[in-house]
Every structure is written in structure tokens, then in C-alpha cells.
Amino acid sequence: MKPPAVQALIEDLRAEILESSVGSTSESFAKIEDAATNNSFTLNREECEFVFHSNQTVRNFHEALGYPDDASVELHDLNVTSDALEAVERCFAAVDET
Image (cartoon, rainbow, N blue to C red; front, side, top):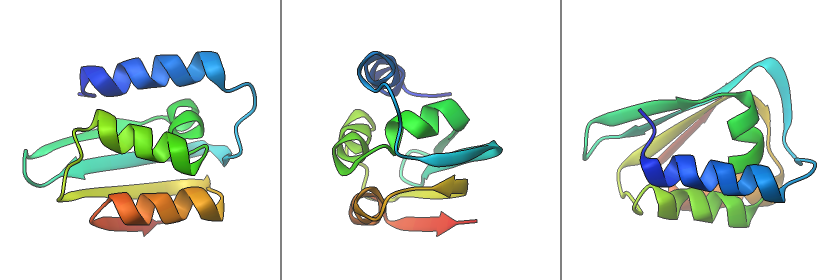
């Protein structure tokens, strides 16, 4: 289940971002796992387009998660800008792109 702060962030981003920089398909999603809390959840295509839109939205997402040290992200069928991807790699312990 998505943390409430993540849900709130997605709703805020939905109102702010008119056109996402993330390339996606109907098969796109992301899986987030926090080893410290043993919590995991999935972002659907639309949520990914908001959360991974820019380096700032990625940092805001990491903040909404509570700045976890051991969280990992799997990006499935997403084309994220290099700036946003660098932010993902800085914020999360492990990043896997498939």
C-alpha cells in the first residue's frame, strides 16, 4: 500500500504537471521496496509519469517516503530523462531498469 504522503504528492503533481517528460507504454510501472520497513508498493503508469517527471519530483517522492536509506526502485518500461534518472540513483540504494 502506498504511504499517505506519497498519495498526497501524486495528487499534488497531478494538478501541477500538464505534460510529463516520462516516456511510457501501457505496460509501464515501478516497484518500490524499502528493506528497512519491509514495505513495498507499485506505481502505475500515470503515477510514474508524475513521480519521475524531473529531478525535483524524484526528490519530493523520496521525501514523501521519509528519506529511506535502503529503498530500491525497479523501473519497468519507462523512459526517464537523464536528470531524473540521476536523482533516482542518488536517492535510492538500488535502481533496476527493465
